Length: 167
Image (cartoon, rainbow, N blue to C red; front, side, top):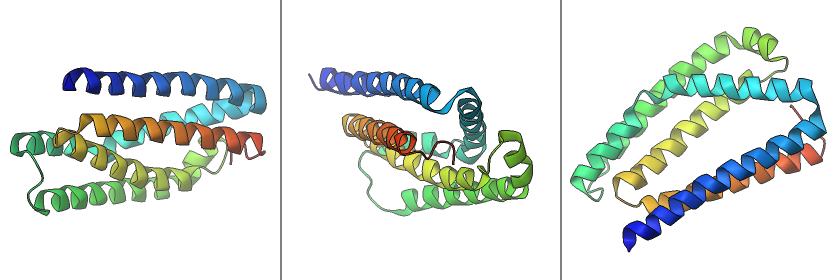
């Protein structure tokens, strides 16, 4: 029964993410136009590629280690993982900052500063979610992922409707 409830939460989380992403893209395309949506899509693609370098697999290793040990008994493991993620994110951010003018010119708007902020935010969010999954709290992680998707999509819609568009 526990597996079934967790499965329902995970499926609901993925469904909410997919449907809300489609709806947000539809609203954005209608509201912003093709050029701005293209810039936004390019920004998301660059962000996706950059997070590959800031991740370096430490979150998956943390999940494996915690699942083997059970509950988090001391903070050394989490502290080490957090420190490593911070250093990896800082190195990636230095490269983003150095390549900022090139990235901004390529994307068509000043988005490099936002990329730096999002690299740190994404790395810490993934560390938190993988810690929950490693402690076998997948249902809680799915609820948090669902809330994150809903809040993110609603924020995007509100920003679009209030005229922010591509910042």
